[in-house]
Each structure stands twice: as C-alpha cells, then as structure tokens.
Image 1 (spheres, rainbow, N blue to C red):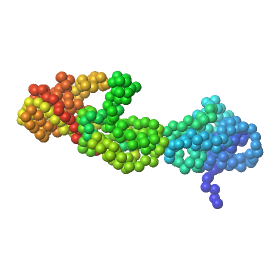
Image 2: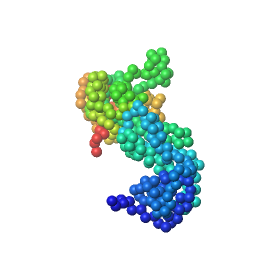
Image 3: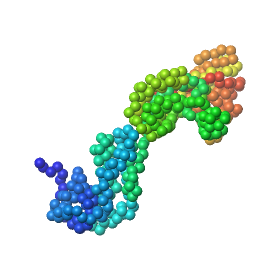
Image 4: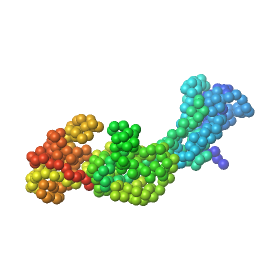
Length: 411
C-alpha cells in the first residue's frame, strides 16, 4: 500500500534532526521539534521517519524527556482526570487547554534554536491536541473550539484538571398578561435581596417575575445552578406584553443536563403560568443570540388608555403635530434612581385615536425604541418636551399601557 504522506526531509532538516537525536527526547517531543514538516503525520510518526532517514534507531528505555519531563507519556492519566472532573454532567462538545511551567516552555524554544530547527510545535499546542483526541476516543464527544459545552484545563505543575461548564441557552418570546408582574427578579430595596421584615424574608419586592416563571421548569429539567434572563427591552410592571410577544434568551448557568424536551417545557408552562405568562417558540440558542437581543432597537407599538378632557378633533390635531417630531426626553423621575440622568431624543412614528368617550380616549402608538410612552403622554413635569399633554394644553393621565407588538422581524 502506498504511503499516504509525502515526507522527504531536506538536508537542513536532517542535519537539525541529527543534532536533536543526541538529546534525551521522547518520540512525541523529538517529532515536535519538526512539527511543521510532514503534514498529516503524528509527532511519533514524524520522529520514526526522521530516525529511519538518519539510520539512528531509538534506544530501549532511557532518561526522562528533556523537554516534557514525561508529560506525554502520562496522557492516559490526564484522560482519566478529565473524565473524573466531568462526572455528573452531560456534554457533547468540549475543548482542552493546558497550563505549563513557563520555564519549561522557554527551554523548548532555546532547544529549537540550539539544534537549528525552524519547524517546532509548542508543547502546549501538541498536548492540547493529543489530549483532545484521546478524550474524543474515550467519551465519543466532539473536541474543538466551536460552541463547547465544557472546557478542560490541565494544570500540569499542579497535577489537576480545572473543569468549566459553559451555559446552555434557550430562546423564545413571551406574552405577559398580568399587570402585577415584573420582567425580572426584583431584589428588595431595603435589604438588597438578603431578606428582611419588609419583604417577609423573600429578598424580593415582588413575589415572582416573568424570568422566574419561565426559568423554573428549565432549571428543573437541566439541573442548572441558576439563570440569567436577557430580554429585548422590557415593559413596565403594570403594562401587558401582547401580540407576538417579546423576544428573550434564558441563560442557564452550569447545567448538568443538556438534552431537554423544550416542547414538554412549553406544555408545563402553559399550565403553571396560565393567565399570567405565555411562552412561544422555545428553541435552543447560543451566546451570540444574547448580544443580538440586547443590542436590538426595534420599533414598538402600544395601546394606551388616556384620561383627560380633550375632544377627538383636538387630539388628532395634536397627534398630527407630534408624529415624526423629535421628542426630548430627560430620564423619567420614576426611573432616575437607577438610570443615568440625561436627555434622549426619540420620535413617535405613528399614532391614532381608536376609541373615545367622555373624559378618556385610547391611542394606538408606534415609536422608536427607547421611547418612554407614559411620559410622552403626560409630560413628566416638563421632563419630556413636547408631550401630548403640552400640545393639547391640558393635563393627561395614562390609565393603562399595553405593548401590542415588538417589530423585531421587520426590515
């Protein structure tokens, strides 16, 4: 059978190999000195080819390797340490790294210079690759840098494996039907989450949240240690989120189980959250989706109930002036304690009256992302200019506010 690898070392490489062969190097490290020659060969195979070309057979036994100190011979031990470190966790993709004594790494570069090799491969790179191959063979998992479930770091000087479990991500859309429900867990302001008389020991301002309701069955299914909720914006506690729902990604921290039946989770949520939260389109996701969700700035549509003495004709006239006009919104008084105090420029894209009665009317409004709709209606004591109230010249009060659509899929 023909040799599948074409490897004809040059005279310079053979001269360098002859010098290296006089040193106490294991097959892995001898081959590594010429690691960028003979593509497709393992380092021991490369070493054997060079020894054959030199006519220098490897002696049986011998001293500890001058470069790795026997590390490559102990690879089976490191594989066992990796497997033990991950006991109790489900994982299908992984990546391997290693921590070496800096003096040993510096020594190998000095040796390459000493023997005249321009083709060396670092011990760290070779060890990580070989450990990954053996872990793949032992576990059936797939090694590589693409979306790993877990990361193994072999600390060679210490003799242990550091094990990192990466989060699992689930995306979807939620509809919030309850006007007493915050989007995320809200720590008690008095005790900052520790638990006190004011919060009845819960550490929370509100008993639960959209985040906690959605996370509960996923935490149970994955046996994760915690979760982080990433929403495409948020609505006020007393506002409903309707339409197709608001996009979100739930990040599950240090999950033990990754094979989860999301359809079953959705069925559980339809029962446990009935009347409060509806979850749509649950699907596996990834870390990159968190950034997309957090950075998205889609327009949003609202249905706003307004109390105030104004005729429909006057309201329509005011809306005609307001639509498309720049609005200067200083950070609202109600959120000034948690957001920087600055002025933001926003616009109302469209607005119309859809219902009217004595002393009240209902609007459908579409705005740019980040528009404070309540403040645009009421004026917030002059912090929003112009407001609908200032354009009408009469006090207005928002009776209810619903987000009717998040326009994230429009181009």
